[in-house]
Length: 319
Length: 282
Image 1 (tube, chains in turn orange, purple):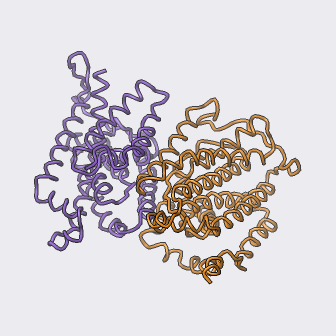
Image 2 (cartoon, chains in turn purple, red):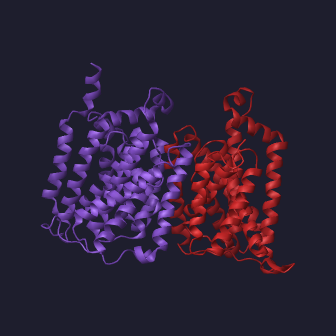
Image 3 (tube, one colour):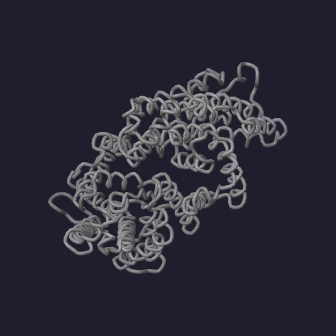
């Protein structure tokens, strides 16, 4: 009986199938929007990775861009030294980000929300400063130059309309989403939710709290690194911007718009966010930041449930 | 060397005045207010407009900038912040980041994105010879003003009825309310004074810190360090932390110009991991 109740959320729903079908149809029938679809997929993956640590493990991070940037620079450098196969850059980006995520995960185990916030922020600032200073490696403020990309898996050449890029990002997103879905419904994910709910009691019933948190932080860093690698490869450019603070803030907003803790939040948030950004920066291109701020404040003061009540209610059925 | 030390001291004292308001909201009221730097920036721009555009004397512009920012803080506290006090830390972070973005865009729109300079009066440009080291009069003014403020703050917090009520309201808001203390009003006044101090610091330090729309983000880390390192027991902890930070930052940037930026962030990570409750924990 209990087992059935725990296993129920892991069953596939019709809505989920429709969601992914819509993504595929969007790619097929809206070729003009390939660049936008690509961006949404990458942002969705980035927000999904934040959801793993924020939504499932309850860690508030203010420096998640650190891993996006690491992945992007790694993929760019891999392309620069002559390994032109995009899959190699993708794996390398995820691996390096995962390594650094593992190393820094021990810093976020202790302390309060505030200390975690500051530690994650500092880590991303240190990385940003390294990228800024190590001009020989990263190109500093000019951005990384001379990144070369061959055809994907030796067969699919990236086109200038972003068709291949969008398909590539969507497929990677889907694959990693499946993995995350497996993970959060496995005992690993359930124990994470227990830890987020009450750390002390989780430890008391014998959950290895530290090891679980290190694990999920590393996996999330990997995911963010892959998102960064996708960003670098599909735009064929890496600049300091990938490590900037506003990236960390935006991904938080994306996730919160869509809702945390059910995996689709980041993806739905990315769709809403990108459409909103498209519309608002069409209105006043320079002051997108102003609207961004208004959304943040409104979301909190009015209440998340009330601003996004309708989509949330729809999504509940999906849980 | 001595010049460097004095510069660091002035910088640190300035950081203290800027962050002192935050040490109450964040350190004491446990509200994660990442938008504190926006108030400092507002004060700086008030100063620039008053001095450069309206021609108000510098020394008069300082208190005006502080009052202006304090009022702004009071209005925002009553209209927006009150709704967020009891929320989760995540909500507080989102809310205050939003305020930062809005402030940055508004300043960019009204004042432009270039760096602003506050025109200093001639007597502050003078340099004073002090036993082999020349020190700018402006630095001395900063040290004097901030020193006096630190003393006054400590006095108010520890020796006056208001300070006692504030400490009570912070230690246990429910009991304090039960004793007839108007906790909401105390927090509002404290918030306004804290914003006003940040505004004063912003105007006073515009010349050293550099004033442009990215100010709130650039100094967010510094304020957070002062507060977490200083702890919440009185004003002495944050003051010492701010001075150490100021000297470390100035020295770091002078002796290791390439690694200047790292010193501060690395310091913060080490500090947070080793002493999460601050250097001078109770």
